[in-house]
Length: 308
Image 1 (cartoon, rainbow, N blue to C red):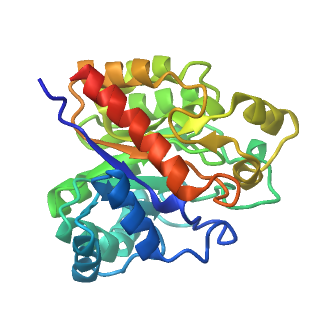
Image 2: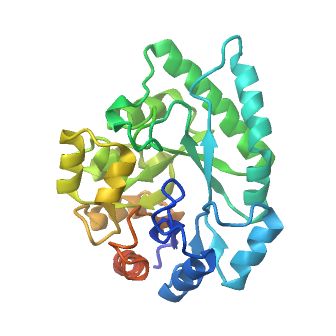
């Protein structure tokens, strides 16, 4: 019996939004054409895609590709002075309208929620060890309540699930952070984007163990492999997230040390039927886009077929 998953890719293999010097000169059409040729069924979004729903659909239709999802920079972790929880959620609801409408127009079912309040992930001179954290249980609880309200709005207004992306340099980074977030949020309103690479870099000795714990909440998966020796150096030398990217902390499935057969087996056994998205921030001058995108696809395709 065929396992009902689709394999997509993030344009980071060709161009990096946070570090435009990495592949910034590459046209979007090059990524789309090569991705389709390799066998990918869809793309996640990046800064070079059309910003309106019809324009985005037209561009992807040119290449016979689906819109997988798109990153949304949320700011619910920190409330402004004098602002209530309800006010903070209302501001986020207003701010997200154009992005969510674009995703809805393109049939997207999950949005990548990246918490950007206080994050250091885009600061090349700031170590990830300087990331923000919640100082009290009350702050954690209030954040969960805001996420629940926002997630409920996305479902009721757009039919889109909030897939929370645990991320280096942000409030939710470590396995303990993921555990806490899942414990405090409503499983019917807030879901999990599981990122294998961020799980390992964030402290999961074995990302599959963390995945097993929360697989019932997973609605989206980023398949990012890791170079363990580079991550060890990044930790020891207190690198920023972006310096880690430049120096090769991440790579595509099949080129690192994560056990993807074990991870995919957990997903299949749990009934996961979403996207598997190759996402590996690298310098295309060092890791040629086409070759690495193909390696990631071939690795996942082979494993998925073997599990069918």
